[in-house]
Image (cartoon, rainbow, N blue to C red; front, side, top):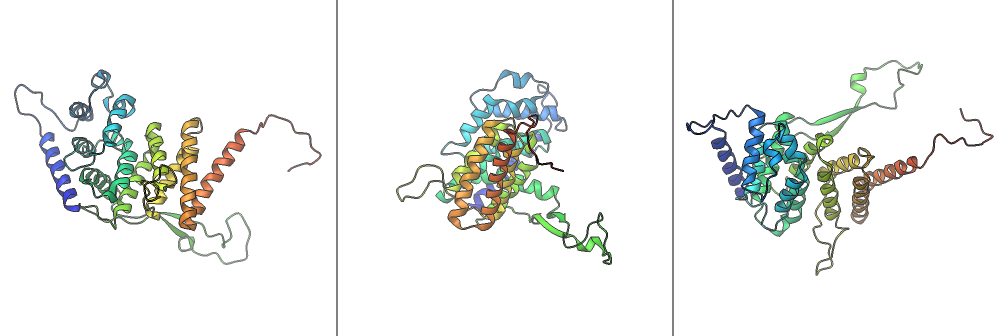
Length: 337
């Protein structure tokens, strides 16, 4: 599997280099790959040979990348192909298109690839134990991982958490002030990154998790339909949703180590609290949290139980706050200060 992934990535990279060279044929216009508008149109033209139909509005748009990102008809065709039983192989044209599009180094085109990450990761992780050729999916995931590794320079993402055992600046104290720089507690949000050329079983969760971290960093710009796909696969991954197979085990159940579970919870948190006006997405996110909570209970994973349980409580508090009418005057003999 790892050799196929490396070969697929090399083939995709070589093809991208050939396509990125300026045209010297007199009958063809000179293409400058520094033009983001041109890159978006080239991506749309390449996609036209893969999916059945390209809406004319994409080719004529003045903002082709934005239109491609938000065009539901085109997204539905791509999603259907990604869910096909033979998708994800090393010679898959759609995987190659996703790989080439992301390698274009255009932020707007990056969003288009990230828009389909829930389906790519969802189908990939659900099939990985079936021993099917998935080098195409792995090449795309490695491209996302490598981009994040390069942009972060391999460094970990950390936050400083104040130590509550020390007095704050708003309170008087007789204690001798200590150096605040040395008294901060450092929390690691995402560990340091190492470069990988192939997807190995021991590093699979980390590679997919980092790709989801990249997805989360751009999530306000991602269409809602993509987030609904993500919630769907969270239910499937939990193993608490779907039909049972002949052995009584729920289909598509996957391992959920913390390095994968953590970015999943961040994305679900956004789906719960970031789109208060989208009831469909909120309901899907609550359903996904409930399934993951049941999975955590089944696995006796206390950290996952605490995290998913907290998200469920936040969702309930948010629903309860919507039922409160703050303009209503309540008669009471109690004075609240």
